[in-house]
Image (cartoon, rainbow, N blue to C red):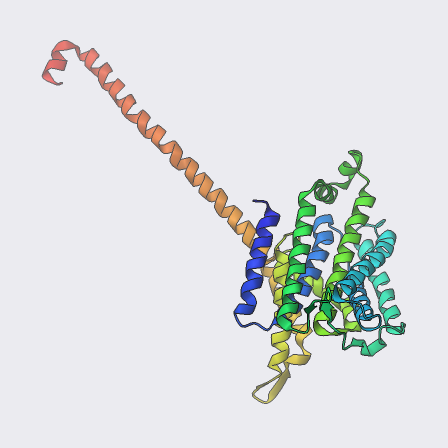
Length: 363
């Protein structure tokens, strides 16, 4: 069974069991949307090795595109999500075309600067609602048939989209295209010497990542009925980096787990509210970024590969130890079998040296 198929089945099982366990469907749909966002970011940064600090631009533009298409144009949800996908790809092509020529910190700084330009555009554009954002975005009827105002039906649609996106990204990494991306990440000079146009491959990966980040923004906007400036702010890029590092960047499962953990932490810490300790009062609802930052620092110091990365490394070490132990056990019978043969040969030589008389008396 292919890794992509196993990943698809495992996510399908977890996604079906989660609402049956009593979890709120809208909260689960929000987790799924951010999981798609993290998977899109990981597809580029985890497989190319270039850090983008501008993915919030694609996420936010996707949300605005889907919200405007559904609210102002009256498009159905599938067309609104398609608009978010196209908008993310278009902005990704523009930003990637200018930034992909640079490496390292220079690439990260260019993506951040261009993403901030998108942020100020959204702040002043007439169709974004400025600081108020787009509110009361209608969910509508999928294909004119399925009423997405039902939370469970909405979650089912969002879950199917996530499964399709995650499976598609994993299949791309299993294809020759994905292997070339890994070759460019590991040794770009050697990939170029083999005849691969590294810039074209990196730009393609960046546009694909931006397109699915835009789709994630559209999913989030339709789920919550809101597209705001927070979605396009640079801090949202920091959040997706945190999700991937916490779960394990470069892994298939890590970004999805990290996204669920971060969204859950934000929700639970906000619900705590004010906590009184003696004469001091701590408002956790306003200190969520600080608390998540502390958790991030601890996780980086203790789990440098991320949760999934450390777990995978632990399994690999145990596998190596078990294989070595099995090899040692398989070698022992050979030594034990050879020992009686050597002793019997020695007794035969001693009997020959004593002669027939000594052998008869058992000397």
